[in-house]
Amino acid sequence: MYNFTPINKIMKYLFTFIITCCMLTAWADGMFIKGNISDIDTKQPLKVANVQISFFQGFTFSDLTDSLGKYEIKTTAIVPEGYYGIEIEAKDYYKLNGFIHVTKDCTFDFSLKSKTPKLILQNAQLDTVKPLPVKVNRLEGYATNNLIFLIDVSSSMNAPDKMPALKASMKYLVNELRPTDKVAIMTFSNTAKEILASTEAEDKMLIYKTIDELSFGSTTQGGIALNEAYKTAQKNFIQNGNNRIVLASDGVFSSGDKEYKKMQQIISTGTQKKISLSIFCFGKNTDYVKSKLQKLATLGNGNFANITTIEEGEQHMLEEAKAVKKMK
Image 1: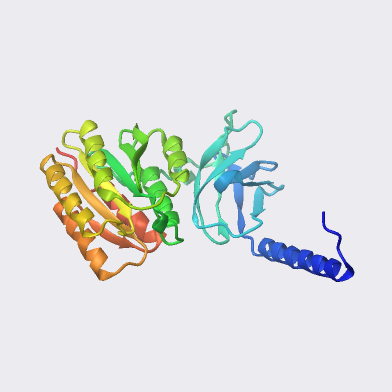
Image 2: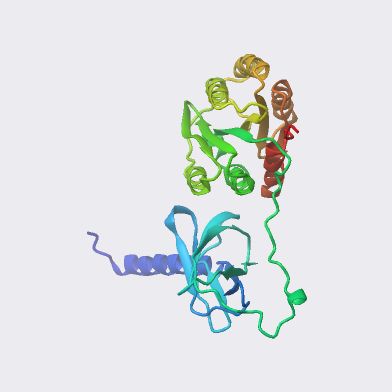
């Protein structure tokens, strides 16, 4: 325990004041998420509905709707753009769980289904009642997917335009997948590891959780991991399906040209087995790196994209699930 002299006490108080100001500034820079909660049948606002949003590392924020069904959640700091869990509860209504794409100060409206059906067509004309919007099946007409995500978790991927964009893009795709589509997730840095065995997209919560828990390693050894990914794809091969490895990296392989040559041999063998390879390069890269990755994707009968934003990632991820049309 230190004995503070008067000057040290002044410095101590000044330091505390500065830290407090920084915290208040962070809080002031928080973001608002607001919207309305209503009854899905009557369209009437629901009051005292609890809206809770779960962010990374267990942080949650919540609010109760007012008499007009409005809620407003203010976070204590800016959170990264991405997909986060939302849960809405109200007495005598079915609970609603899902994911929302959070950006700076956004609005989301939701409707809950009552456990007790209500008569809502009294004194109303049937032709004035409009059907509820139905989620569009963006993958209708396309083959069943057997997707293996091979994720670079080396230290070089620890950047705002890399791993966060990758996670958000993957969640977007998973949200669009059909229940019968399959997803496996493997990571590689200095070693290769399967963190999610091939799982039907019906179990979205498990897949989301696995994506959220992606963590970083050290150097990047792509060859060994790619070989394991092809084995996983072959093990879960779907006849006439979209059997595809999606390699996501920033292209910074520790072994240089030697590693690329090893990967070329593995890809050539995999292509003969009707397993495609697409490569997404995250973050800004040199033309040299992008050129070499594009050649690997071409060899793998797949696609290549250099992704620097979440929107680009979402678009290209969805295209991978639409790479093979369903046979008639």
